[in-house]
Length: 337
Image (cartoon, rainbow, N blue to C red; front, side, top):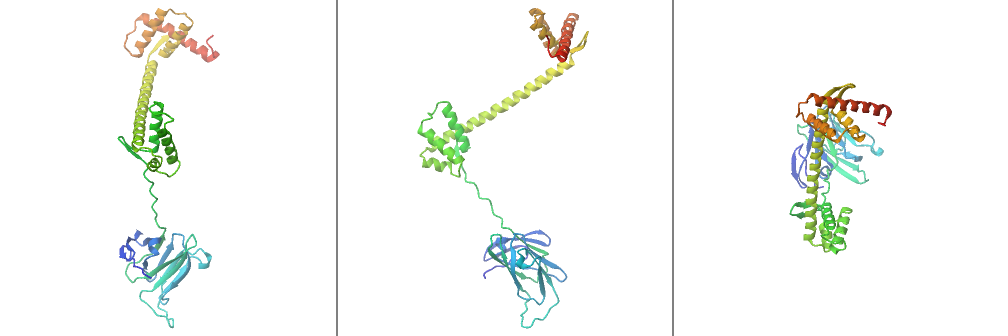
């Protein structure tokens, strides 16, 4: 068997190349299964302590043999025929004499294990007489990198365009009648986009298969990116306009609550006055000229740009009183009639 040895917990170069054994704690070493199956793994046992080998990759120990039983004993967490043996425990003992057995200062331990697919795997461990003591050796699952997704973009003047961007650009061109829906380029591009969005096929490869010029795809992609940018700007502007509108409304409400005038029915704010004025206008109980005058006073009151005369206050008080009365009637009867 051609194996190279893992030197303690460090870097070891050998037949299988250079690799790194990663310590998780001072006396706890993790070794990926793909390395452990190729290399000889050193284990260290000191008198009075136990070293554990744990198969955290779900391999089950089915058979093991120790080359020299005179100074080391082992046990498992479960019988080998149970299919649950996943840990081996090793301890030093006082030397025993086994007739005919050859002893060694560095005995090895062979382990045969069954993986989760029923395949046999072999592991070899050797007792190293170094001063380092590993309390636990953990055989861990092999780390497999997720396969990288193929790049599926079209380069344009505005950057990389995805198939979804190309579709946006195509729809825009169709809507603007810059290309006919019956144009073969439009039909083939639409088919290529549908295929790439619903399969693993690359848009560039599909374009080549369907004879779609790369310059056309690039233009569709550029248009799609431009439309997306335009949409983002419009959305941001709408959000800004809505925020401004909300702030303005909040200010109006604040000013309305701040401005109050005494009436026979209590204090009326600007909203009460505006409500009273609107009802009076609907019932035609106020002249247009007077209504315009009251509206102007209300607007100036909201902007705090006017000092009110006695006449202003009287007119506002009368309209506010009607507003309070109409509001009460509406709350109690549900109607102004």
